[in-house]
Image (tube, rainbow, N blue to C red; front, side):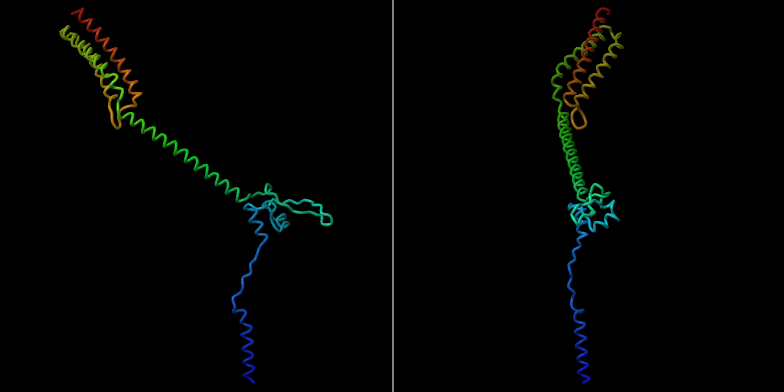
Length: 229
């Protein structure tokens, strides 16, 4: 008899413990209030619940306002939410603004890259232009002719004056050396030397004018030597 009572008690205890030992089933919980809040902050309708709770406690945050609604026997005050009255805004417009800002930054970077690339190509073209002097050949023969005139004229002055015009001859020779040194510098080629050919041509024109004036001064000095010695 005692054994049967003990057995029944043990079975009853097992039945009582069995539900606790089995894994509990998880019940899905849908929170309508949080859903509305999340949708409002993202891109859904601007609406919060419970509405009177947000009206009294979170009016600035939610943009809640009270209004009268006629609905027969159900007429009364209601709460609605307006985003423009809220002191916070949606996350989505912020994201859109951030994306637009990022797009503008990328566009600016691309514009600067294209600008720098164009400058680089332009500099390469200028470097190639500076590497070879294609304008010197235009002035080479004229420079040689004027140098012969200057050399012959100064030598004539020294010989005719028997050295008495050495000071005037040395001064003109010095000025001629300066002009020739400038021409030699303009004609230099290679990395780190030279100008664009358009600037070279302008410099050669200036040197040609200066050398032409020196030819005229040499001719006048030769005329003085011829009349006085």
